[in-house]
Image 1: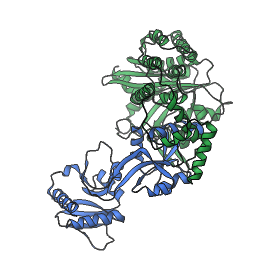
Image 2: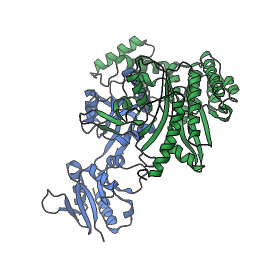
Image 3: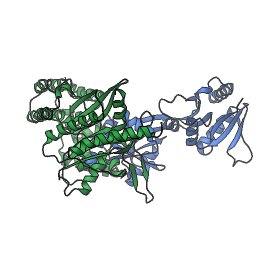
Image 4: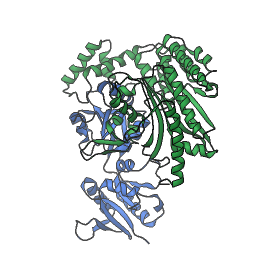
Length: 385
Length: 232
């Protein structure tokens, strides 16, 4: 229904005030990022799937603007324009509307988000645990009693792949397809079986660069373009094109992915359970320095949660759990309320270390944060009061 | 009985081919008043009014239920309707206006043959070039749906309302989704169609509101057109 009644508005405002008291009380600076944002950051940073759900328009001077589809990017932009240095530690909290087009009208296109962003924290695992603790404290302050906390760790998966022997390009493909179980499975099967790949319209080009080094592959590409009078349209350099051709050529002679590697990946992806209990399984699936290090971080994070009074053994970890938002790079979490219709996600968050560089920071800035959907929370908290 | 409204293309080759086919079926299109008016009557079947509209307006008017029947391109119909929309049905493929909606990339991209290649290229594009790989098209929905079905996410659409095939050469996009009949325009612009890049094989169609199934006028129109299509 359009609009909120006086009572609905008051209930939402009262809830949000309770949430913000939790965040402010923990020392987070309550900022108000702009609702109107330059569109380019969202357009270039996000994929078309996010852009397709954003309200984009042109201002009277012809600049492309958008209504913010979330508050994380606006908060990070705020930081880059206000902080003394991009990598100065900062802790922000915010509460306000965000806008996403919902084609089927099953979700509101205007909704409230309350959240925190902790930038350049000195203690990575400690800040992650604290963001989770604050998110839980905030939803509890709003009156939510029955909920489930789900955890994931993208860094662990990356580290696992880093430790397995395979061409770099394969690793990239597997990471890329992580979110799409079927595509992931097919890619893995292809790397494992090394079945003869079917010929495509460029197989002849791959043949031509077989056995050539990068420089020679590039010369071949340039020679072909020249001979066939093809202009170099499309913004990619001949070096870039040649490098991918050479990778494809190298792929042909690469050994199939070892059964042990496939088993390690499968065993890893099957792991789920309470994060304390799964430690043993996580430890068993792979060795390798990067993986051991990521696992160490995982353990320290659990310890930090316990130290903050949380009970991580009540949470559920799944190796395949993550959020299909491109921001996240490591720890991820989600809080689901148990409502009559099933599970309703009311909050989510995690680590997103690449975002600030992507939106213009000259130096890397680590970041961890959360966002709570305020209307959903009100609905869920009210459902069992 | 309320008169039905049939949307007919108001210009171009689609209009000529449609009028020729209707003529063959013994159905005349009488424009009321002068040719400049956009209303008319169908002669040969009682109870059908004609509204002359552009092909894309016809697709939109079918979606919104403003017209009962309409001749338009399948590409425009699929672009306009949601995939699960059951309110509009294709009554008859009309056998003309064949065109494929395709994904094409610069011919110079020797390393790209399939959508999975485009996916790989788009993945590193932002890091390498500081922007997303851009796809110029007027088919926003068809493109989004097709790319999603192929698992390609790291791109952005640049809306193009004409001369889409020139976008890569002009530097306003890297790839395009456009309609092609012979491929000659693509080739002239140094573009190639991806091996698995045919989104839709389109032709002109007569579409209608699904609820009109069983209407005698619709049945008569269909029978007339089928006969005309069967004639040599």
